[in-house]
Length: 257
Image (tube, rainbow, N blue to C red; front, top):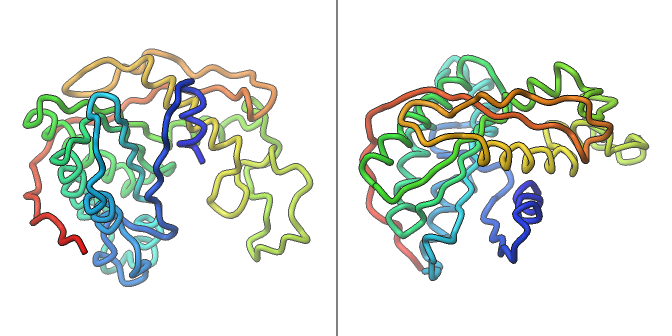
């Protein structure tokens, strides 16, 4: 939903094409507990096989993966405690998209701030910078949702929230859903409600307006504003992120059927 809000905020006749699949990880082969039906590789393959006509200067590609990898990594922490392999696969799939003409990227990282999540974001940032050095027409913005969610959780009422919990209970019993879903952070467990999605879009817009071109990190001089009266007009913040890394070789292009 945040992509639809972003299109509204951009204020133009944006066509939004959504390739997201519920439960998708970056690469399902990395996790025994993850969905075996959906991952970034599969979504990228669908897009490439469609042979879309791409107007590179006016096309924005949004990439947001990692939440389901984080869930799987916690389940399988004894076998695979690191999210670095997932981040490296993310870069492999991203390069496939660059090679078919998608050169304006918006990359979101998950709204969690543990050590594994920071490692995931660091590998992505370094890898994206490496891609930028090799593809000079590439432009990208990274948005670390952990910054936004940390601010919200630090002062929920400043963002207009009455609860940081989900409106729908964990057992998904709709008869026991809250009466004020617009004032809960989530609609169901770990899934934001509509105005939280709008905050995502506003946060992204703020980053795009304040960040500077850099080989090392985003400019993060814009402070977090507070004092919103409801989720609709909640504040947003800019983001700072890490530095530069090795490139992962790109495997063969997918077979299209």
